[in-house]
Image (tube, rainbow over all chains, first blue to last red; front, side):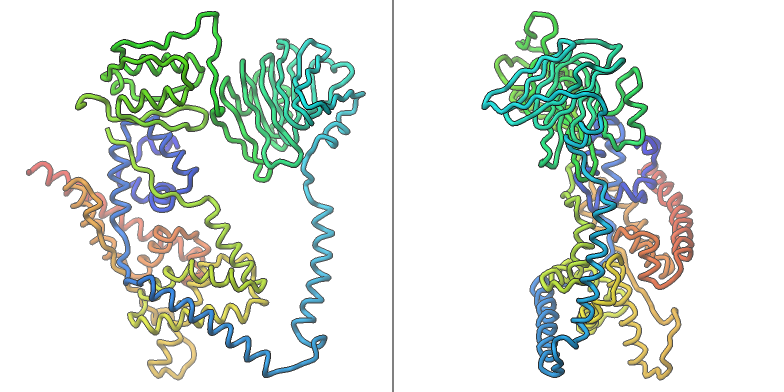
Length: 369
Length: 207
């Protein structure tokens, strides 16, 4: 998106991706652009002008009314049906001699061959059994057959809390230089800090790498998605299919998609796509012992946002110049983050969106209120 | 500052869906066939009117195109972009018909016989500022001055989201020629854009 920073009005108007966003946007396009605009508020005016120009200049089209179109479409389908009826009556041939039957027989053979070929070449989805089998060291396994969460203590003091019906595989003794476990189902991990021995959770196609933190992994073999949500610390997530996976795994730093408290990633197995978002119910990140002060008296709204930002550790993007004009008196204790945001935004005539694991606030400011 | 309204979102699967309907139709699915017609009818009709203004004739041609693909469905390629293929068939058919009407007994035709006639319009009520309305009116004029084949390429590329290869298929020319047409159109647009914007500055200066 960086190339758009110096775009002129004309360049925007004739830029293909820009036009697609204006004329036929997908959810993804829209997020990308709104995000970019939130980060470059000075570009709003030119973008809005370009948008209006794109929308207003269209080819002149003859009108085609809805009933007229429907009639025409129906006529085609009717024609089709009467035609195929004629065919059936006119040329009767024994069923096995028909051209269609021969084609069908050929298709069956081709399909069979194709299927066999497909089976051989199918990149098989990675699941727990296959992952454990490829680990190559002596493994232990704990399965939670109870109806309650089950805690498993690992050799290094880390704890894994398994949901009912889930299982975790781990080596009898961790290898030199890294700790690796395999998960099927859902579990909460509380990992003992040891930067010299990064901790890896393998769950279907997704690899989660941490140094010392707590987080939840949800990965059922029969589900479409794999997700990771962070409670404390930082976690890096990447796909095993990623060409750089080996490098990300061995690097001393956390690379890949890095998520922080109250953020989660969802990996869609079918499309091999990782998206980052905010967990459904963000919790206050305990830093130190004092609860965050969320009572405000005639405070600029930007102070409120920055207090919420540090309370939840979620980045909140807003235009400071505009939001500074808005004073707010409110008690935001004992509410969820979204209730707090609803209340604040309503008070100052703004709105918010959650984009890419961050909150973006848009509003006109309060000069005229 | 004003929050930009989000335009109406198109489902992400839009394009794949068209291809999916095409494949199902080739496999003999009548429901998919009808959906495909419904989905592409407006585009075909509007495209047809750019060549000929006899509405009934265009509807007949579209009908023939669709009945034709149903008949040939066993021989058609499942990976052809459906929109481009349909537009190309309609264009060919309209032309054949035109030359027959002209009592042209020779059964071949030259490209120049097909005249694509498109007008661009500006919908001024969508524009807030007076200056931008002026820009829009000049831009529309400029687009309408484009040579016809460039106009058609611009129309397919910028208003129907088609790739170079698809445009080549519709216009029945080489992909390289599509690039050339678009490049020429752009040179034209760029050279005129400067005068449009400078006019805009001048007006602002005078008022």
